[in-house]
Image (tube, rainbow, N blue to C red; front, side, top):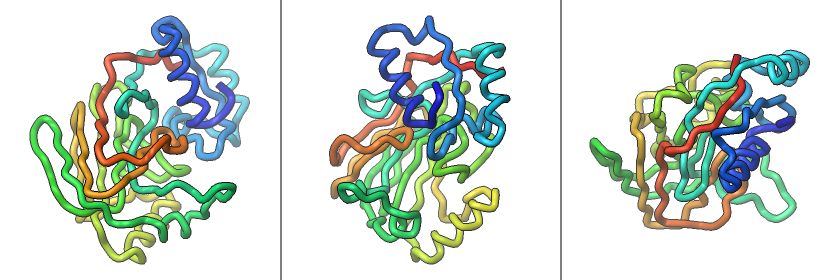
Length: 222
């Protein structure tokens, strides 16, 4: 797959529709906008020849897939970002300015939390939004999702954390809610637009579930 997270997302879901996931090795050559999953494999657009070499000579490993309702994802899924206006792609500051508090209840196998949050990310791999990360230790083969939810705070403060993340630092702060679970469901008081692997949201929802899928993908990793 020569592309980014969205191209991988569409490939994985099409292979699943054709019942071919267990039988097809998938290698990635980063050529997309963010390339966050390929980044977790140590691949970079600046060294594209390394990615082609791995694609042709590497070995595949059975890799977890997440499930957002009925849609598979490989890298991450979550909520918080609102759809861009037609024909317009918001810049990062405008995207941050469009965040609105969402009151929700999240439930997983060992607990629940209720409160107001700006965003939540269910991570199957480490990186999001072009290299930001909460932890580099997220493992896409541990049958767990690493879940992070950012509570309401002054937007200048949130921006400062995200800005530091652009310099390679983890986006971590004491208010950050974190949990590891195999599944989590969310109910909200207002509309959210869940997204997976950076793909545009299909519709607004007030209920959404995330889980580790029973299906696996054979990803070329070494």
